[in-house]
Image (tube, rainbow over all chains, first blue to last red; front, top):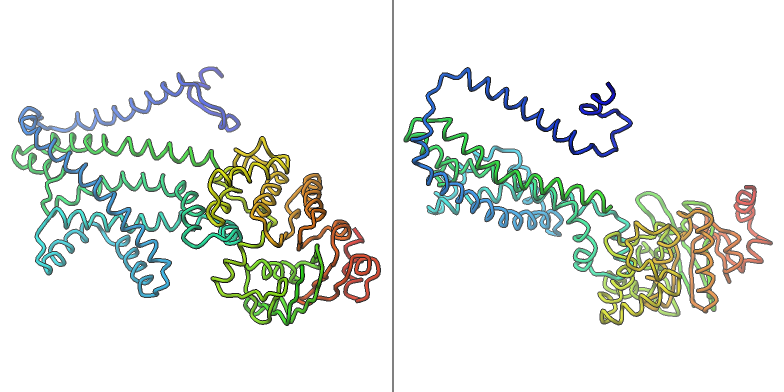
Length: 265
Length: 243
């Protein structure tokens, strides 16, 4: 009886003990099974004529879109890290207007839907400046969007460094920039990196909204195929899998980074 | 050292922490500040260390006025070594790197030179086998000895200790106090804030008692601790010695 219990249950006083891998496998399998049952049941109820062959003929659309999404995400990650760092620096700037601007940027961008921002950036701002490159506008909007979150991540990381560290840096005679370089950043990076990796997974999914201004990324391509073949699910299922393939490794990497920082401190 | 203060004042918000402090000490090697908490002794030490600016008044160290502009202060801080109550080592660096960082980045030693100095220091304080460890893996006493090694490796003209044993167990307190006593015997100039009356008695040439932002009494330990003149000193000592 106790044996069977230990296959499925962890008592409160056993929380810190590692679970044997066989037990882990069993329970993961159980969770998958449950999920699969729900899916089977739901799709079984659906009266739907699956049309995989027709959609399969358009597979190059999916590949091209997936590749574009990957490109946009990586570029946006680099750009948004840059923007986020600048915004975080501006937040502590001596120039008060710059501080206010950074605050305004972060609060507005974080508080409004990305969909609205994309439309606004493309149809109003880019239009006013006679700037027609969709890809660049989309990339910039996405970068500014996640840059706002990244600036908060960086600010949080820097502020997590205690006053005693700054005092110590001052006492040994480090200059302000040296203090950042040798004391604050090496410690802050441990807090920042996991959050940044998690942000990247969000960024990849958020890039799907760029389809509304017809940037030819993954979602846009899937929508095209869906319109051409009148098949919704056959397009959205590969779409979901395609995003999962990109985000899942990052999520796992984030987990790993988090546990690593926890053990080191 | 020769230490003179004229009319030093400091307040934090509405609270006056130092009220017109005057000091005139000549040929002192070890100066101890004692007194009740909140009496202003740490603030005075931090002003001497160049970590805090006085609102008013002047401070002369070895007949040179300490200029409280950010630039001059940076230069001043580079010539004194400060040891804090909470050790304040850098947790992302090893014990050795904690010592080499100021040597390399502030005092422009070559990395090999800095390493050499740091290793000598660690050996001297019996920490040779701990050089590669981060502070988190050291005991409190070991951390404080690394902090002291970091402070003296730059060859400071003055060493400042802000309650260096307040965060330590009695056993570790002893090991740190021994180190401080050794430094005194080497003839270094020390200023320390301490609650250890016995220790102050043993190492200090001069003791100043601060209370409510003023220096109540200043004199050699035999006089100040054994035969205090001021009523406030007597009260303070009575309160401490009771337990």
